[in-house]
Amino acid sequence: GNWRKESATAPSLLTKSCHDIDFLLWLLCTPPSSQHTRPHLPTHVSSMGSLKYFKPSRKPAGAGEATNCLSCPVENDCMYSAKKIYHEKFLASGNVGWPIHIVDPEIEELYEVKGKEWASNRLQQRLAEDYNEQWSREEIERRPWFGRCVYESDNDVCDDQIVTMSWEDDPLEGEEPRERRFKGRGAKTAMFHMIAQTEKQCERRGRIYGSKGEIEYDSKTIRAFDFATSEVKMHYPSQAGTGHGGGDEGLTRQFVRAMEAVEYADEAVEEAQRTHIDCTLDDVIRSHAMVFAAEEARREKCVINWSDWWQKKWMGFLQTHEDKS
Image (cartoon, rainbow, N blue to C red; front, side, top):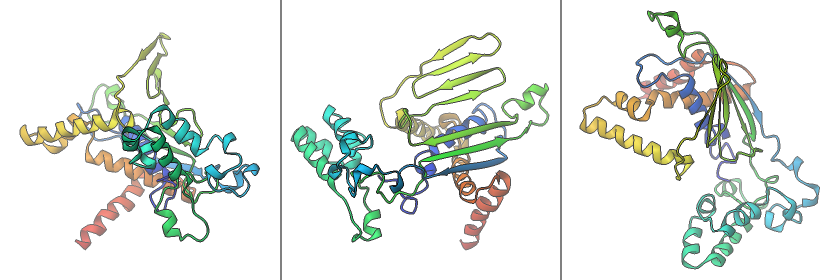
C-alpha cells in the first residue's frame, strides 16, 4: 500500500490516524467556538506500539516462497488475499470507486467504457505486479504493490499502537461560581488505540466516561447514558456520502464559508476559523505536533512532558527557521 513504509511516507499514526488525535484534542482541548478562552492543554503523552503481525515470521507455512497473492498456494484460504479484497469484495459487485481507483485510477473509466471484464483484467494485471531481490530499494519504494503478500512486504509502520494523553486541573481565573472555572478544564485522560485487525475497518468508535454519564459512538450512531436517571438517548447524525464519512465535503464547505466571511464580511481570520470551521490554525498545528510527540514517546519508550516538548521542539523549530530567514 501507499503508507506501508515510514521512510517513504510517515508513521502510520500520522498517515492513518491523525484524524483521531485531531478529534480527541478538539474534544478535550479546544474551547467551544462561543468561548474566547485559552485551550486546556495536555500535560503528558505516552505511546506504545510496533509492527506485530504483518511480518515474515507470521506468514502461513503453506504459502511457501510465494510473495504475491495471485501466485500463492493458500490464497483461497487467506483473509488478506488481495484478490478477495479488491476483486471479489469491490469490483465484482460493481464498486469501482475507493479502493479500486487507488490501485489503478483508470479502472473506473475502463469499467464504464469497456465493461467489467476489461476492468477485471486490468485489476488482475496490477495485483500480479511484484518485485524480487534484484530490484533496488528506491524502485520498490516508489510503487504501492497492492498484490504483494502482506507478510512479505517491506512495511515497517505500526499495525498496533496505543497513545495516552493526560490533562491536569487548569481552571480559568476570575470565573464564578467554581463549577464554571472548571467546566471542561478538569483533570482527564484520553486513550487512543490504532489496530489493524478490527471489524470497523476505516471507521471510528469510542467511549467517553464523564462525571454525569457516558457516551458511546461509532461512525453511525451516538448513545448517551445518564448516570442519575439511567436514561438512554440515541442520536443518528446525517450520513454524507462522500470521502472520509462526509468529512471531505463538510470541511470544504465550511472552509469556503470561512473564506467568504473574511472576504465579504470583514471577519477576522481566526474568528472565521473558529465560527465556521470550529478550529484555528493553532489547533491544527497542535494536533499534528501531538502525533510527533507520541511517536517520539513510542520510540524512546518514555513519557513526554507536553509543555517542555512544545517549547523545545516546536518553538525551537520556529526560532531556527526565523534565524535562517
